[in-house]
Image 1 (cartoon, helix red, strand yellow):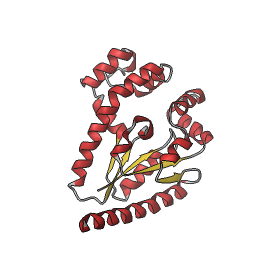
Image 2 (image 1 turned 30 degrees about the vertical axis):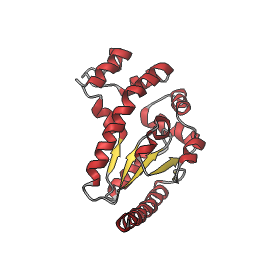
Image 3 (image 1 turned 45 degrees about the horizontal axis):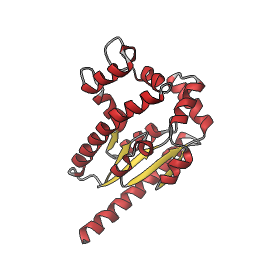
Image 4 (image 1 turned 90 degrees about the horizontal axis):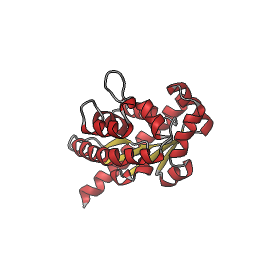
Length: 209
């Protein structure tokens, strides 16, 4: 099975691309969903997060307050590195397991959404890298509207991630999300057809070997 890794800067439209891929019948593995599962109440991962950052990163119901944690780690570079060292190996392990399960179900390809695919060193989990990009002003506007963040908070997130040049330098394919939603969907649909063709070619080559 062909494994496509989807990444991009905060607010660039990864979730919208993934939603469209799901609507087209593509299996999607989302690293953020895995992280939520790993940090569920009572989990060893959540216990370690609380030990490092304190109970202030919890909501009243005992679940992880992801926005509170995000604010903490973007003012604490060492804390961010420790959190990534805790989460990334576990997320990578879960992704490998889910890809193996999907491979037995006969899907031509799957999409693995990893916001920090380049930064985390998880590139070896995928066969191709699809990057979705937009302008920085669009990132600021979209994230501020979506999460209620102040512009300086969004800037801190952008600064902690790979640059557009670094991401695009690693990309096999790029989607530019700078226009309307219909323009974005058209690009995703075209990319879906491309990956189906690549998956067929991959299957035929394997079948002849």
